[in-house]
Image 1 (cartoon, rainbow, N blue to C red):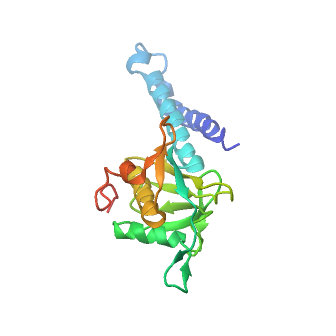
Image 2: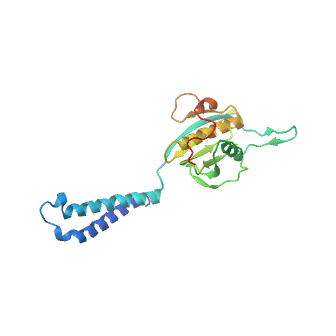
Image 3: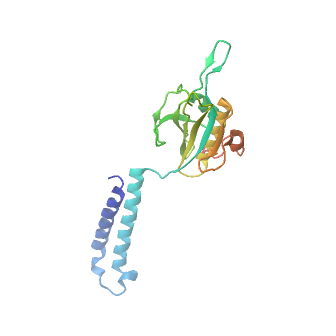
Length: 221
C-alpha cells in the first residue's frame, strides 16, 4: 500500500484542486481563448499543482528522503584481543572506532544496523569490533555509514567485510566512510579496501584514504 499511496493521494489532490478552481472560474468557461488564458487553463494548472504537490509530499512522508548507496569491500586480518600489559588483553570495540572519529572532528553515534543497512537504534559501545554490523551516524553528515566485519572462519587468514555508504546529498558521507576505513586500519592494521564496483584487487587503506586531510572537511558544522 505504501508504494501506491503517493499516486492515490496525488489523484485525490488533483481532483480537489481542480474542483476548487472550477468553482471559482466556472462562469468563464467557453469564452474565446480558453486554453491560452481563460478558465480552463486556470483549472488545468490548479489540477497539475495538486497532482505534483500531493505526490511529492506524500512520497517524502511515507518513503523518507531519497538516498543513494555505495560502498567499499574490505579485507582485514583476524581481529583478536591485543595485549595492554603482560597480564592484560584488550578487546577492540565499536567505541574504539568512534573515538578515532572524534579525534578528526566527528560526533559519531553508533547504532545497531539491520541487513538492509538501516540504523535501528542505540547500541552498546562495548560491542566487539569483530563480528559487528553497525551504522555510524553524525549530525553533520547527510547520510550514514554501515560497518560490517564478519568473523573469519578458522581456516581463513583474513576477513571480508563492508563499509557501506547511504548518502542523502553531497560528499560528507563518502568522507566519513573513508575516515572509518582509516580508523579501522589504525586499530587493526593491514586493512585493504576497494570500491564495490572496482575490478581491481583491494589496495592498502593508506592508499585508498590518501586524499583525506587531517580532519573532516565536508562535515556540516
